[in-house]
Amino acid sequence: MGTRREFSPQALLVLAALQEQPADWQHGYALASTTGLKSGTLYPILIRLADRGLVEACWQEEPAPGRPRRHLYRLTAEGAASAARALAAAPARQRAERPAAAAGTRRPLRPGAAAPTAQ
Amino acid sequence: MSWLGRALARRLPASYRDWAEALWAEADEVPAGWERLAWRAGGVRLIARQARIGRAAGGLLLLAAAAWAAWPASAVPLSHGAVDEGDVIITIALLAGVPLLFRRLLGPPASRTARRLRAVFYCAIVVIMPAKSVAEQFVGATPRGGINLHTFDLITQSSPAAGSASGGPDWGGEIMVLLITLGYLAVVTALTAGRARLAPGTLATGAWAGLVLGLVMYAADPLGGDKYATNPWLRGSASDPLVILAWVALLGAPAAAGALVARRHVPGDPATAPTAQAWQGLAAGLVAGGTGALTAAVLGTSTTALVIRSAVVRGWLFHGAHLTASAVYGRELYASMDVTFYGAICVLFPVIGLAMGITGAAATVPVPRAATVPVPRAEGGPPADLPAP
Image (cartoon, rainbow over all chains, first blue to last red; front, top):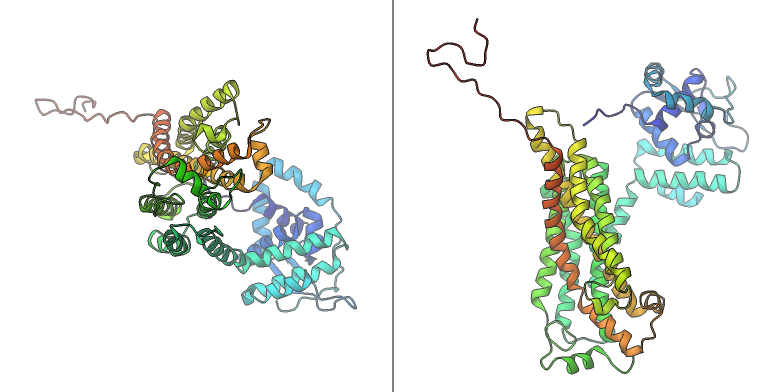
């Protein structure tokens, strides 16, 4: 049988969204808006990527008043390399879909708004 | 839903609890209304999946359905109550215990497709049991048009048949059902286990082909093989093409599945390729036959059970016919007594599917040419078909 793909099309969308600003921490809702994925699809992907060491996660240190702390995500160095490889190898059709998906309501976090803490 | 999510999250392993909390905290950022509800619903799905709540719930549901299937359904005590009580124990043991035993013996499912197919087959067997039970027992307790099953037995049979309302237990039938059920559980567990070395596509193709076969069979005979029971479901010219289509599906669906998977399967070792491709084709045919039989049996026995209880289903089946209550009851009786038809197709269809699957695969897989063995020359020189040095 054929070889198994390294990332699903949905995982590629998440990697692409994270790779656009690899140094910034992003939260789940922003990623969902960017990729168009539902929470039930997005979070299992983030869990798998984190388990593989491609994504690092942390809790927001200073949450907005009256709001719960938020979980933040960004690519690790290995994740960034892996994402670049996978996205370059992705079929052209998927690459064409990415900018369209990325045109969603993207709202990167302000620097300092989310200093990483231990996960 | 927030309360539910947090309660479910406590069941998660520690490593996943953070993720559940993260998803839940994020819900506050999502615009209120349907969007937030959908976000939280995704959270519940994630937690349920990670906590394997679905599997536990499925197990409990299976057990409950088995108990319900086996429990004597009739409010009126039938003469063969001993069989009904035996059904309780046997069915629960079969549907709750045997899958676990077979899983231990034959191994867990090899892929996500295999797991789904295994679950669907187990559930289909669970559905057949209550439908069969209801079809056989409710009819005896539902007198209509001045006749009930006991009267019917007395009128039509001088010595009541085993398994009828006034006859004794039909041990032969009970044992046959037991053996068929055990056979299905064993075969589906074996085919979906890793040792079978079946590609997920093989199982999926076989299952889809079988679904088509089952639906066509059901459309042709919604109340089993007895034409009197279904009359006037489809008359003459409307019925004939459907019956022909059912035969085509019976022979063609497993053959097509076998041919398709044999063509697609690309094994690693070219030397064993024909054998591996034939095995995939055979298995696809077997799955198609089994799925077709189960689909027709589930839909057919359910309709038989419903026709006794539901005026809507009766109106749908006997559309346009001005039947007296006793005439309808007669058809219901024939249908309920004809559920053995489904036992027969549950045995025959997989056998036909197996034969047609391997036929389809054989038609697709090129027959390997016999290896040419170099013949040494008489004078001891190099083999005839090798160039001389």
